Image 1 (cartoon, helix red, strand yellow):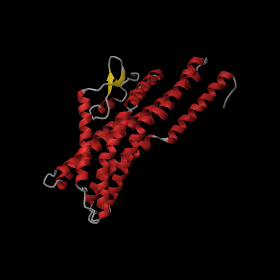
Image 2 (spheres, rainbow, N blue to C red):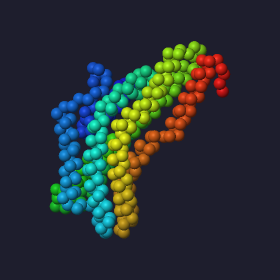
Image 3 (cartoon, one colour):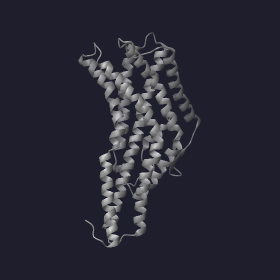
Image 4 (tube, rainbow, N blue to C red):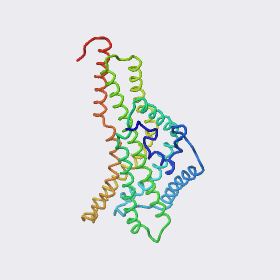
Length: 317
């Protein structure tokens, strides 16, 4: 069983290749840092250019993915297309502006993981989320390839750029949802590891005040990371991503109730578009399991009371 490696979420390094940040890992220093290169800068410029081009194309021509047979429906569809680029540009800008905070968060988590001797191999959930992201990217790629045949009219540049922006948005937004959810799961696991460590201290005959203070300090540090760094990094990102995700889901629900969209194949196609969006809409809420956090806090309080009682010689229930 290997103790937690500093590269505990290996897929985080793909931020550089997706134009999200300059996050890098130094093998010599065994820590995270920022390392901007001409390749990373070019990638970020390319990603921003894709969304700006898609936005300009949507502004230059009143586009909508599907004729909803109503002016209000088509106008809402056009608003969704415009929001695709705007929301992702703002989310990427927020994420990049907080990349130094992300480095601080990752390095402090690594330090806590080594102190708590947490085995990263015992936590498969972030890796599973990464594989789901890959599968969703592949699924959406197939769907967009089929949709392109019907939507491209004489290969109009505006249609090509708009669909390209939508494809880039699916890849980046779902990856950011994955990163956030993985970070939450890691912090939750660290919190449970800290409580396990405290229980081990209580079970010993002689409790060292220094070890007890170190364990309690680790608990406070984990909570501080959750309440400050994590929110600073992903708060604005999730706000912009949720805004678009809700609009897109509403549009798909609206299209599914249009006349002529009631055959089994068409409803199945609509579900293929909708299910991944709902999944990533619910995922950040699902990993923030309030009941689970309450149970961990209750367990911590019980162990702490036992520790205090053992130190003072007063029996506790």
